Amino acid sequence: MSKKNYKNKPSNTNKNSPKAVQEKKSYCDCLLRLASCKIWCLDVLAPAVLILARLQMANIFFTSGMLKVKDWSNTLLLFEAEHPVPFLPKGLADMLSITNNHLPANVAACMGTFTELVMPVLLVLGLGGRLAAFLMLVMTAVIQFSYQESMEHVYWALLLGIILTQGPGKWSFDYLIRKRFYCPPQCCKKDKAKA
Picture 1 (cartoon, rainbow, N blue to C red):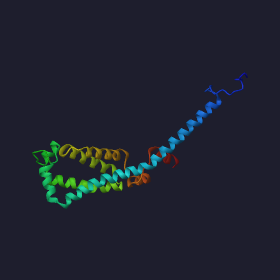
Picture 2 (picture 1 turned 45 degrees about the horizontal axis):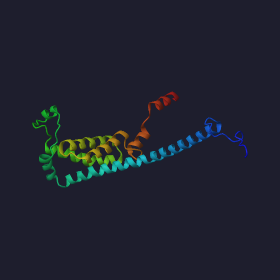
Picture 3 (picture 1 turned 90 degrees about the vertical axis):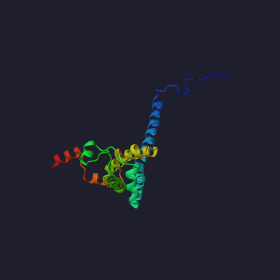
Picture 4 (picture 1 turned 60 degrees about the vertical axis):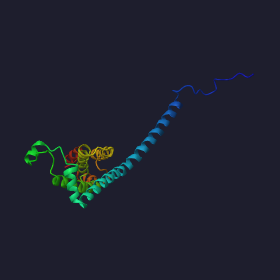
């Protein structure tokens, strides 16, 4: 029987050897490159996701506004009987001589229809996108808490909340305007120092 020579055999048990450290480093580098690539892909998709959210919410609200315009007498009846708009602040209610703390049906119908027709257009264009999302979010809350509770309104609120907090994205007029005219404080200081 031959005697095994363990001295000439390379040792794989030492995890701190230079070769093992190099393998770990290259493995980590590979994982970091892969993660970086995936993050880059998600960054590229972000504007598309935001515009899809904007289009979805604009479609819902604009369609509702068009239905209100199509049958205005029914719209006024709905705002009188079916879903009067509550939560009128006391001082404003007193100033308008309103006793039941609800907006008059014609005022509420005009405000609701205006919001449903104008804000979706602004949202699709991404012009004043955060303002449009905020007003649509307020309207969603009024619908949810005064007229009809629905999980669908929660989804609307989530989509509008994303647009409100993230902005309308790179595919919007807001982005182009900000890119053209906005000067971050650190850049303005450098420009003034050069002049």
